[in-house]
Length: 107
Length: 120
Image 1 (cartoon, rainbow over the protein chains, first blue to last red):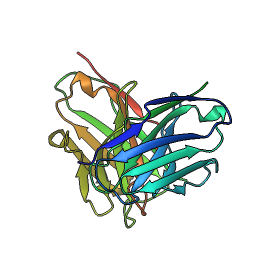
Image 2 (cartoon, rainbow over the protein chains, first blue to last red):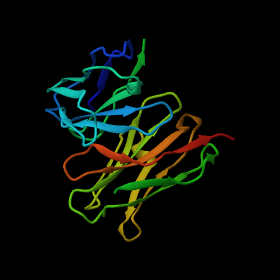
Image 3 (cartoon, each protein chain N blue to C red):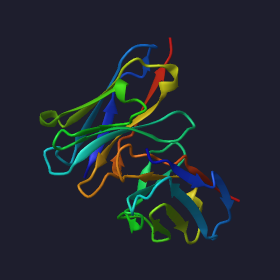
Image 4 (cartoon, chains in turn yellow, cyan):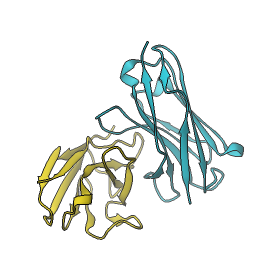
């Protein structure tokens, strides 16, 4: 099974900051990676698929990158409404494992 | 517009079998490459993928729970059912169903989720 490891586990940043979250796969997964945002008490929402394709309606300050084993989710200018836990998920093959999550807070 | 909604018991006893139903609209599981998956999230913890059924009735399971999981689809009713046998308190979680699109196994959108508590 492919394991997904996110770093950091938690992050505190100021409004306007550039924030980057990393996700590492235990083996190569090409670009078969998705990112989700889960706001407190809410349902997970798809942000990015195919490692870098922004889902319709997602603000352009979100971007994804990477291929193979190392991936990033970047928020170019952090906003208050971005407070959430972010998860990566691979879909190279079953089981479609999620990362452990990165909790993002405002400093 | 695609919507999904989970239904089932909110409380089950240890050793019992959990049966959850996902009722969806806005797409058909007869359509090539479509799918519906189940994901769960224990309180305060991370997401865990459980199972996925494809339009052609192909199925995938999380190996860590495979012996306890069964996923089925009823295309005529636009429903997908997940059963989990031998429930334990560690299975207490919010259970989500979610749409798997034609282009790849990411999940969008998700149902609202249903919290299932396992307790005697």
